[in-house]
Figure 1 (cartoon, rainbow, N blue to C red):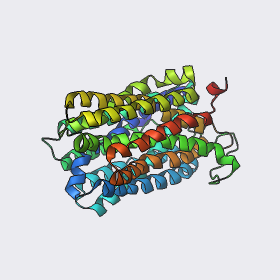
Figure 2 (figure 1 turned 90 degrees about the vertical axis):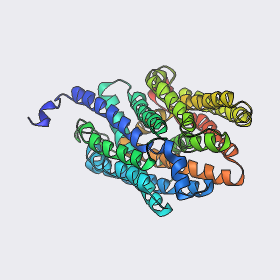
Figure 3 (figure 1 turned 90 degrees about the horizontal axis):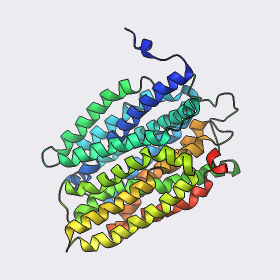
Figure 4 (figure 1 turned 30 degrees about the vertical axis):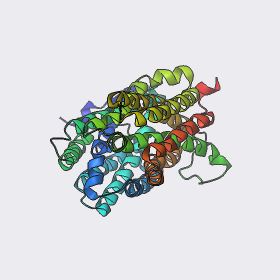
Length: 409
């Protein structure tokens, strides 16, 4: 029986199928992109890297992500998001497998570049699809899609931390890569086809190429920097939480993965509630409160828990994880909020606008941990983490650049 027979025919039914497909795609993307998080301390030690060197190596992901996002918007505008996704699904697993098998800094750099490129390419595709799906079914789903990303990140972190004492990181990461490479294929089958994904702007006159600077793109820069701030916080939590708990607070293998696990779990909950939150309060107010409250609570937890870990390790573990939970709740709805605002930018195809905001923001996801590592070299990691905390406050401030129909009421 041909798989085409399972496809719906009406636009709304096709969009509903695409929404379910996107849920699976975001889940797998979270698993692949965060698969190495619980094993970062081991990889760092195996290659013999200091915090500064490790942070510098993470720049490879930044260059890969910028390249992928820059190419992604134009490619989607030309070929459609589903076709570009079919290319991206083969790149991300390759990058993860390379990270697991890397036995030297150059190989890790190359693998991080491949991962960053594939991740941002897929991220632009899936967010463009999600934006159009919302428009077709006339119902919010973007935050729930990102919740599935967080579910994937949480599962892969918990599993990786749980088996760290029994399974090498090489076997762990290669197994995730093989599973994802197979699972991506059927998951992508029901994405919106090119005649429905509005990749070329539809009936509205839009541009596939927009200037880097200028008055016309100033709103996109505001959104991009706001997104950058939230993703710097997210990237710092993913890449440095395990090292903070191990090196600065003295927790062993497995337990040191609890920080990011708590962060990811909080993001799951906040994103599952996010569609209703965005609808009720509007994206701008949601981002403002998340940036200010989440950043303040995270900073307070570090100030209290790190000094306390020597004398009261259990209490300190609870406090630091409460800080990561608060940060996760605050950051969770930010990505969907900024992406929704970007997709609604007048005169620019949604995929191109999302790609421009994404190329700024996603770069922060990878560059932020690098800068955090460099700061930690001259100070300490607990001090350096106040850089991503400050960026969360910047995201809260730049919530004023978000203008959607809900925020105009």
